[in-house]
Image 1 (spheres, rainbow, N blue to C red):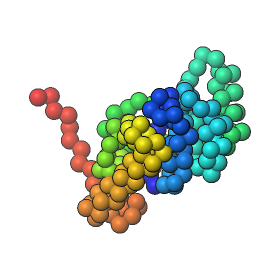
Image 2 (tube, rainbow, N blue to C red; image 1 turned 180 degrees about the vertical axis):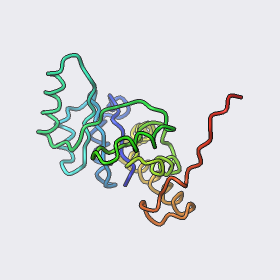
Image 3 (cartoon, rainbow, N blue to C red; image 1 turned 90 degrees about the vertical axis):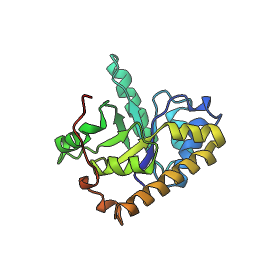
Image 4 (cartoon, rainbow, N blue to C red; image 1 turned 45 degrees about the vertical axis):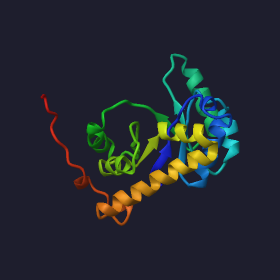
Length: 188
């Protein structure tokens, strides 16, 4: 499923199980999760909760480079599959970024502003490998813990399927840039 969970800090503020509930929900819908460096549970605890779930470790650039190295080694040892390096960009430049990394093996994911299945469809059409969703997941977590997160992810998956059907896409491979109309910014 091209809908993953964003690395969100301090998830236990929304629900006592925090990241542990989210990683279990992610496993139940067979997708991936980003784990924040500011998680309320250790990255090892999150990994042990769902060892077979694809987990991305969020890392930031610190002056203390050894801290970064140590965090990456911990994540690797715990079984994390990838690292998230965040670059803030407007969605309009997503196709240019995808083109710039084409052939390098770098995958491009979009995080931020995804609320509907149509948002997912647009991001995929513009070249993202998948999207990361944050706020709706936290809302689900606060509402009903693991079950609430599962419900949010299932709703987004259903909305994506409907959007794909309405766009004439039988599979993810059928999603192309032609589905998105891009307009020049208006100065009015």
